[in-house]
Length: 240
Image: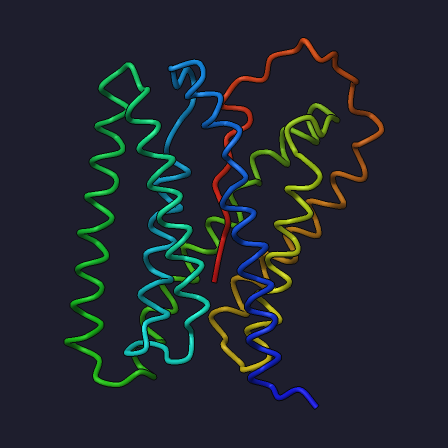
């Protein structure tokens, strides 16, 4: 019989694989930027936010904060590296200095904020229970914000009665990501992983229902149509 710890590790590995795929999902957008040597209308905000999300989950998963969370640290470490690569590509091909300043100020602000939270965590709180509570609440706030980011797309889909800007497989992967990490958090109960990813699962299910409702009413477009970068940019995975 498989032990709870073994089952948790298996589910966590599956979660890592799904999350890694989600982290790679913006690759076509950045490959287009490289080929065109221009960021055009692309905005970096979602990727800056994803960096903060990853950094805080890495802090949460440290043994001195929340023991036995190696898989949380690994996938968010990988995710952070990929997000930084995406932002580096943006900075290289951004023709306006304004975009580079946004990235620089955003990342510096996040590092400073993370530093303050880390100091408070290790100076004020002296055991893993209280550290988990403090950092976990912050992580859940950012995770929920990331999961809620497609709400603007939902409005666009309902208004236009078209799922053109809501890719099915990405929506399915987001749902699966939330469901797997919720299961991971339930096996060895972790309320912070369960709360944000449980909500993410519900939002993912609603997104799939919306897709099903408006799929048939979506106008068919020819292969010659051009999709603007700001219409396909993705926020990256929401990982816990």
